[in-house]
Image 1 (spheres, rainbow, N blue to C red):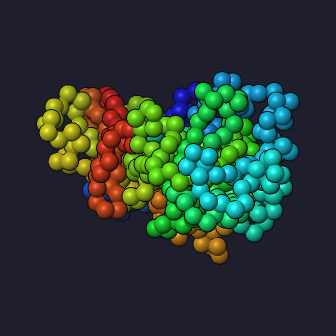
Image 2 (cartoon, rainbow, N blue to C red; image 1 turned 135 degrees about the vertical axis):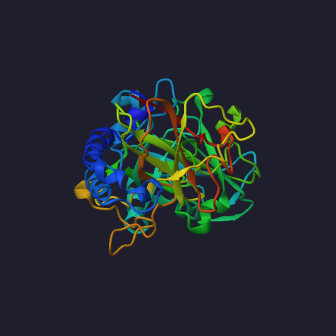
Length: 421
C-alpha cells in the first residue's frame, strides 16, 4: 500500500460524494464568476463542503497510519516473549535518564535500572494523572513528501523527567534513542537543545513522552509503549520504542539522521497537495477538486491553484510559477467530528490549541496540523493540462519558499495531470 493510500483512507469515497453534489449545481456555478475568482463559496458548494466535513475522518486511525520503521527485525515484529524480555510492553518497559559519559551534565539523581530509579509504566501513569498534555500533530517524514497520518497525541512533558534528575549545570543538549535489537549498528537516535525541552517557545506545545494516539494506547507500529513526540518537527525526531534519554554538555546535534545529509533541526514546512479530482472531465464543465495542506511552523493563509496546458513552456528563471495567475481555493473549516478511532469522538485531555469549553480549535488552520481545501476550476476545452496547488504562509511566502531544500523537508509544488475530453 502506498503512502497516499495510507493517508486518509476514507477521503476518496467521501470526496466522490462531494463531487457529485458539486456537479449537481453546475448551472449555478456557471453563473457565479465570484467563485472562480476565489471569493465566497456558492450555496451549492457550501452545502457540499458542510456534508463533506461531517463525513470525513480528519484523524487517521492507528492501523492505517503510514509506517516508517527501522530495525532488522523491526521491534514490533519480535515474539511476545522477546518483547516482554526487552521492555517493549508496558509490563516491563523502563526508561533511563542519565548523564552523557563523554560530555557529562551535572545531575544529582540519574534515573537508572541499576539503581532501581528508572521510570517504569506505573510511574509514568502516575505522572499522567496531573501532567497529561495532548497535541494535535500531522506526522510526516521529511524525505517522503506525503504525510503518514494526522493524530491527537497524548503524553507527559519530557521536562518533568529532566527535572527529576535534579540538573545543576553543564546541560546543553538532550539526545535519546529507542530499542533496536541490542545491536549498536542499528542504534537510531535524535536530539534537542535543552531549552526546547524546558520551555515552549512561541506558543509551541511541549515535547512529550507519548503513550497514546487518538485516545488509544500506542501499538508497536506507532512506537509503543512509549515514544518521543516533537510537535513541530518531522517524524525522525519523534523516536519510537523509547528506552534511554541522555543529558549532555555537547553543544551540537548528534542525530543519526544527520548522516544522510538531512537538516536535523528543520521545522515542518507548509505545503499543499491535491487529494481527488474527477476521473472523467468533460470539456466545458467546471472541475471540482479537493486537497489538503500541511500547516507547518509558518502557518497557512491561503491555498491557490493553477491550471496550465501540459505542453506550455515556462520561463526557466521562474521555477515556482510566481508570475502565474493563481486562483484562491477555499480552506474548509475545522471538522465537526474527528474520527480516527477517537473513543466517542471525545477530545483527549488538555488538548493544546483547543478551547476547553467549546472543544473547538482556538485558531484555524492550526499550525502543525492539516487543513482541507476545495475549489472548482473553470471549464476547459479538450486537451491535456497540469494542475498545481500551492500554499501561502502567514508571512506571505508562496510554497516552496522560504525553505525549498528537500533535505529540510519536501515541499515541492506538485503537478497533477488533467485530461479533458
